[in-house]
Image 1: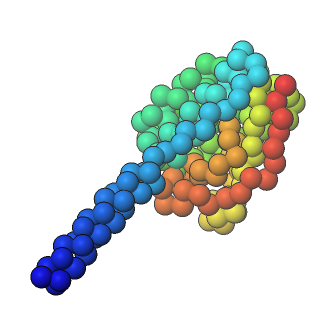
Image 2: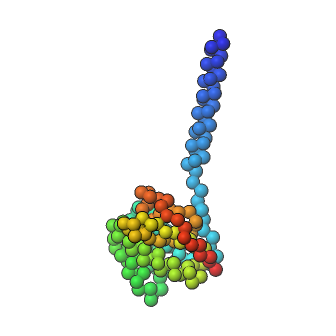
Image 3: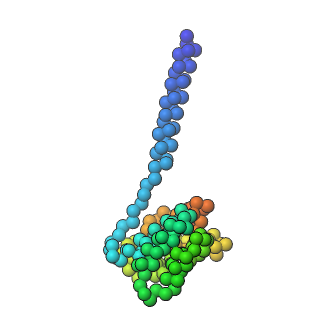
Length: 168
């Protein structure tokens, strides 16, 4: 009789622990979405389109990258010739590696915008030393979380925040 009770108690404990493990698993899978703080919505239109383009590259989705590149293009001034060429190359290509290469040019443009105080929000400059055969590349982020657009899920968190640029 004692054996039956002991087995019953052991079985109950195992079931209880198993239920708790499921709750822990559900909690681990919950994703917290970090939202950028925008100080000036009009100024932030370009950077926000850039961040959406970055998200498409993170997701390794060249078709979506083409779509958001068009939105970036719509925010650029007429005299931004070099960056327009890079964005147009993203729009014209379905090759993810080519899009990521052109994204580096787009990043350089928006970095200058952020440094001049015209981004309308805080921006984080992030660097991945392994991008483009270990030559390295930068990108901008609206949060300080490292999510790499140059490697996507292959090396999602490769990189580190190099600079925080305060918005106006």
